[in-house]
Amino acid sequence: MNQSSTICAISTAPGQGAVALIRVSGEKAIDICETLFVAANKKKLTEQESGKTILGNIFSDKENIDEVLLSLFRAPHSYTGENVIEIACHGSIYIQHAIIQLLIQKGAVAAQAGEFTMRAFLNHKIDLSQAEGIADLISSQSSAAHRTALNQLKGGISNKLHALRNMLVQFISLVELELDFSEEDVEFADRGKLKLLVEEIYTEVQRLKNSFSLGNAIKHGIPTAIIGKPNTGKSTLLNYLLQEERAIVSEIPGTTRDSIEDIAIIHGIAFRFIDTAGIRETNDSIEILGIERSFEKIHKASIILLMVDAEDCLSEINMMVNAIRSHLESHQHLVLLINKTDQFNEIELQTKFGIIDFNGIHGRENMLLISAKNGIHIDQLETRLLAIIHAEQWENSDVIITNSRHFEALTRSSEALEKVLEGMQQKLSGDFLAQDIRQVLHYIGEITGAITNDEILGAIFSKFCIGK
Image (cartoon, rainbow, N blue to C red):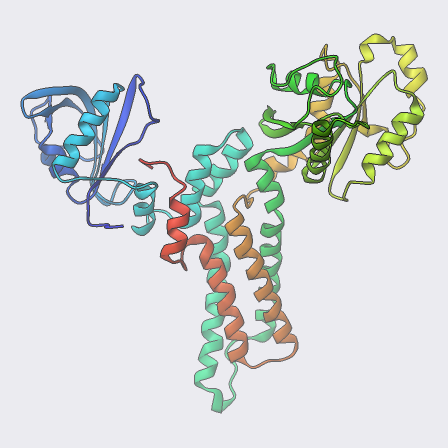
């Protein structure tokens, strides 16, 4: 990337709309736009006040291309830290591309994906974790994902890590100072205080690392598999939760032969529901493949909704529950849904299911009597789903890790901190301790971008849209 060039791009979504935004950034941004723009107040751009929006027209030679609103931001008080011009024009595709062509003719170059945000990072307007927070904010699909990304953008993760890193830097400077006086056998860094500090940082790093499973779920949605025999109402439930006819509903067994996935937002939390093929014995090769995929989805899901028909006998239901439980791991949650209860009265339901025992399914709190077709007790199901993932904790969590790159760096930081503690227990010399502490600083620095390389930057910013 040539940071000395002036870049331009359309920042709004591709296509035609009421209004489009074109962004220009670089040392010559004001001079280039001066050649195209005539302000209604007749003042030159170089004379306009920074941070103001100016009405005027864009011209190609003497042809008026469009009446626009131009916002002027002088360096360093802009998103990128450079001179930035933002042109709000009418959303005609012709107008958008005509302005871009004019900017390029006058000396600007087309921006690469994420180049505006990369310049903001290189000019120290934001750090790397904040830049990734911007990408997450743009792609957020739920209020929880939005809240987490906004916190990251505001520096929630950065502030936490900077504080940890600064404490370590102070101590490693004292440890390394000891190396200069090694012949005099002096100790500048109090080993007791260093141990307490490393233990405190290790606890915080572990907390951040352990929040990744929660953060990943916030970002991508809680994987929730809907499973059961054919014709138990799995597709009907999916359609009700999504409020659209996403899955084909039919009385013919085996209609759903492959997994269908979609996201539903429940009180600000995204759940990725997976409607699976009905589990039964069959000779149909395609249906068998669908059933195999159903069990694959069970292994990947955090929550499993096992649907059975209210007409099924209790022994058959218990057998189904135990069969599914044998495939589950400790972190997975199973909820039994007795469907089609609208066909029975309350006395019949109480008589049949009031004394049911699911042999270790964690009690009756994980059984619900519903009607997917009529929406009966689906609100209770939604409440149960939120309780399972402890939605109230999401509101109270200050910093949550959602990025796999951050998780990897924290994992390596944790391992390096363990080496420091082990080395202190073995009373290793300062030079060995300093080496392990430097590793911790390196991995923490990778998250914020204090330590980075062009390959990492390219991989991160290539995922951004053009114009951002």
